[in-house]
Every structure is written in structure tokens, then in C-alpha cells.
Length: 195
Image 1 (cartoon, helix red, strand yellow):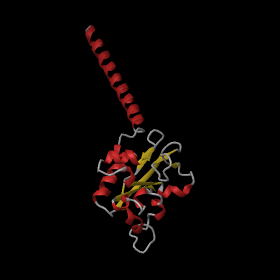
Image 2 (cartoon, one colour; image 1 turned 90 degrees about the vertical axis):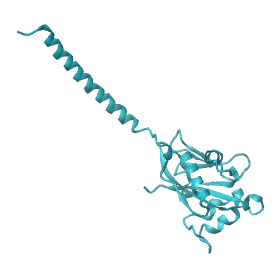
Image 3 (cartoon, one colour; image 1 turned 90 degrees about the horizontal axis):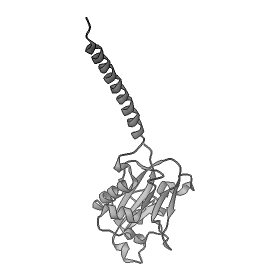
């Protein structure tokens, strides 16, 4: 003889099982959606540039190359001022030179553009104007401003031949006619991310 409550308990267990399956499906959908969102701050251009700048500033004449960073429509600008403020190492934005680096000769094909403030000939910010996202790396090198062009390029004293001399053209800190040239100058160059 069955009691009336037994059937009710079986139905309630079945409902609990269905609720658990639905919860797992919803969780899987949410996790797949969250997989498209980047929660890694080190992958953000500003964070990576500031960390690389700190490392390069502490070891002058050593080239520091960041991990891959991702430029997107919402995370698309790298500025000297923001990087210097975030790094907080006691240098001025004029002591940092931003360069489009590997993307300079692509004439817009890479999606990057250099921006200037006012009448300054220096690139004060790098903007990503492409669609979707674009991966890149950042190479950072700090050295005495007037001597920085000597250790890059293909010159006699060049140490870093993968960095072109033209990447520091127009930088305030490499101009020997001002006091900045006697201070530490840091180049932040955009590089193609090979992996």
C-alpha cells in the first residue's frame, strides 16, 4: 500500500534534479560569455606599459618587452601622461617617447595612429582605430636621452638593432639642445605580437 506522501517526495526529487540541470546549463552559458571578456589587467596596454616602464627605468639600457597586450575599441589609447602617472617613478611625460614602432610603416593597415597635443611634433598618444581587437607587444628602453639614439638602430655603437633610430625622432628627451637630454629618457615602442 502506497502512501500519498511517497509520490510527492519522488516528484520533488525530480524537480530538484531538473533545477540542478538548468542551473548547470545557465552557468555554462554565463562562463562562455565571460570568456569573451578580458579580466586580465596585465593584458591592458596602459597597465602593461606602466609595468614595463618601471622595469626598464630600474635597469637602464636593458630592453624590456611586455607580454602580449590587446587593444580594443574600449581600451584603445596609450598616452605618455597616463603611462607616466600609472608608473609613478618620478619622470615627466616629456621623458617618455611613444612610437608606433613596427606599425609606423603600415600606413593605417595596422589600425594604429599617432596623436599629438597642440603644436608638439612628438607622439603623445597611440590610438587604435581598427575594428575588433589587435594584439601587440611593447618594447621599452630607458637610457640617457642624448645617448639613446646611439644604442639603437644600425650604428657603430648600437646594441639594439631591432629598434629603429627613426622611432625616437622628434622626442624632447633626445634633443641635445635641452636639459632633458641629460636625464633618463624612455622609449615605448609598439611591436607586432608574434605569439
